[in-house]
Length: 189
Image 1: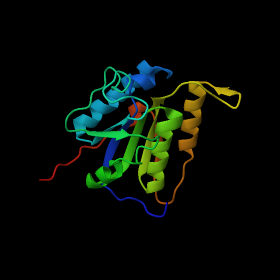
Image 2 (image 1 turned 135 degrees about the horizontal axis):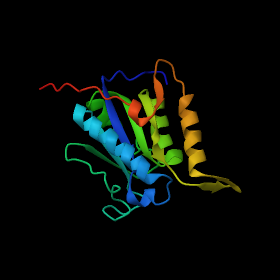
Image 3 (image 1 turned 60 degrees about the vertical axis):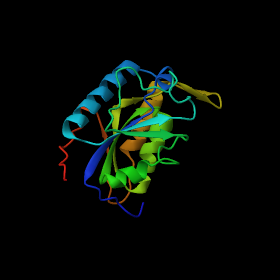
Image 4 (image 1 turned 45 degrees about the vertical axis):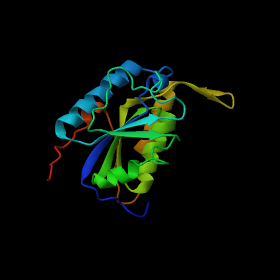
């Protein structure tokens, strides 16, 4: 990345925390509890919240498409509906973040090895500072070319990837849920 985005705000990005996604993921209750905590703390500080949902794998408004029980977007929060793994492709996510003066993204959700990794990696390559919440993302086991990895192994590998991500003049952090701090957002009329 040649250019660091200088937005003054942080935004919480919640990726694919949908009922149909979590069916195959490890530790869904723990991850849901942690994400609900992040959402509550973000709301308390006025931090912009973005709910990213997969519109390709699940018919809109179907049971599998809906947010997992315990998570609910409020009317003033951003809804991003995507057709690709990448939350930025074919959506208004980037334009909305720029309009909100966001330069730092706190990313959590599912699936660690697909939509979460793609969204956080793309954000980094676009110039955003990125924090991946290491204990607030999940996935399920995967087998490819005869090799099987457990969900926990994939989560650990995803965390290892983001622990060493490096672009000039940008910050990349890997934090536990309790370590994430949202600063109060000042509202200007």
